[in-house]
Length: 165
Image (cartoon, rainbow, N blue to C red):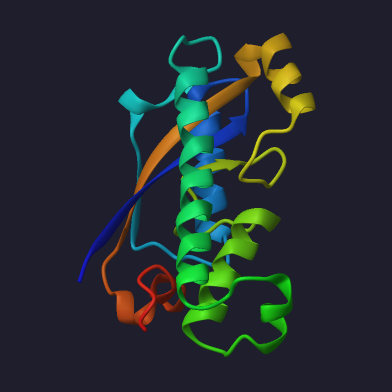
């Protein structure tokens, strides 16, 4: 089975080449996901001076929120309704959903990361970094990558994406 995912990754570098190299180096060294292949999509990457930058970044943030919303819905549907339910949550389907949510909230890059902010190691964009991007847009790049997992059975983290009930 083959799975291809797309990530939009914010980098703070002076040009496209250095930003792309930074992103590829990050993906090569991240511990939670080891992709079989990763390619930069030049036509879907841009600097913060490009008018596409903010709409694409906002779409990435919205996509991360949507993933969290979906996971929260799955957790509720599985019976976790209140914080106290976490104390008796069974290991398995529910705990895997909660684990993925924690990664998104805590800044651990994973297969479900739609947008990732390398300068802050985060799935979000703090107001201070937004101001810095607005002040020095030539120093920030949004790099789109398409990454492929060829064999999901050898990727433990990939199993978290299609939780088996």
